[in-house]
Amino acid sequence: MSGHSKWHNIQKTKGAQDAKRAAAFTKIAKELIVAVKEGGGITDPANNSRLATVITKAKAANMPNDNIKRCLEKASGAGGGDNYESITYEGYGPGGVAVIVETMTDNRNRTAGSMRHHFDKFGGNLGASGCVSWSFDKKGVLVIDNEEGDYDEEEVMMDAMEAGADDFEAEGDVFTIYTLPDDFNDVVANLSKYTFVSAQIEMVPQNYQKLESEEHIKLMEKLIDIMEDDDDVQNIWHNWEE
Image: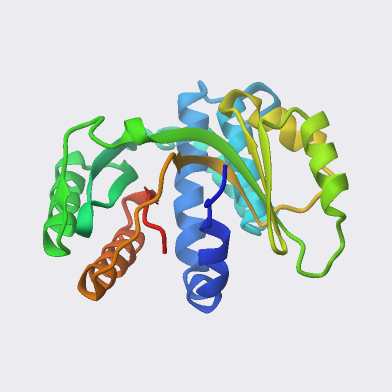
């Protein structure tokens, strides 16, 4: 499964990512609250698989345990997370890049309007449900940064396969482990000796699209930036080969 370069893109913009850490924690907090709500109010990750997945994501993002605890306490309180709903939008960015936007909102009319505006403003268009998701695979993605050389590639690969991973990829100092969505939590538990810099369920493109036009490249960058800054947006997946 070559070409999945999400972590490389994060590395290139690490300063900008650090500046957005508080916003990232806010988005994860919303996911934690909704995971408890949709799990019937269960705050024990051992009995709430979706919550376990989000907690793994939170820890990989270095979200403090106190923050996670406060979110769970809020979620278990009266009315915690009652107003949020998850809505996924699909469309095309400049140059026909396939884009999936996962949102969590308490006002679907506001969010729908914002998504349409974002796509239109930056050379894309909002499409119907299913218009691009067919070209993505839903997978658990675990990323290990081996810049310090702490891990042996072959050992990590063997451990990942024995843990139940679906695929393993090494690109330089970055190891990426792929799982089937239902196997994600078990694989994470079986690889507890490793530290992940990113760990979540992602929509992985089957094929990537290269933009040749400088104008399209700039528009795509702006589209991603404005969506990342939108409070309703949780995740953005696309097949742009950056």
